[in-house]
Image (tube, rainbow, N blue to C red):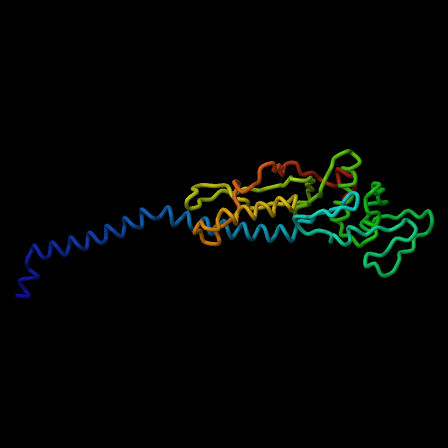
Length: 256
């Protein structure tokens, strides 16, 4: 009887059909879901790139905030601490960067940059006069000089940033520089997300807050709860990075 089962063409046909059907279902699944699995993989890769870019940008970007009228200015990247920015000293007794030993400056002596940039520029009235009395990196001194010159030209700034290419980017209140990338997100489709941002720190904080509020009950996995273009508050001016310029050319300085 068992032999009859194996020789029965109907049974063999049914078994063969089931095998073919199962194989067809598997191939259909692989083909039909391939785009979604690919999009998920690309999205995860983009998120990792964004996190890497942001972390790198935080380490390489520096913002020189020389606040006018002694006001505290937040920065969106590495910055000179507000406590130092508020330091005000007289011309006769400037204090050292650490604030423990006064720096003695002979009468009539012209102070020059330790980085080879020549004499320090005059700090505008109403600005903390001790800005150049601290140990500044080459980049921070350049940014301070750029912001002072922009002020002399009548250009208001909240800060000036520098990227790893050496170009500088001035920004004022409610202004940010943003680099967008595209990805696919469930429930939203193709969107532009914020891969990099620097500028007015209050804007950056508001964008992060808007993104959290939008994704709080979305069911999206945490890696996909990223700020997108729609999270930018109304009234914010997104600046183009093509507006960056060479600080040495702007200040008529020779590269060291």
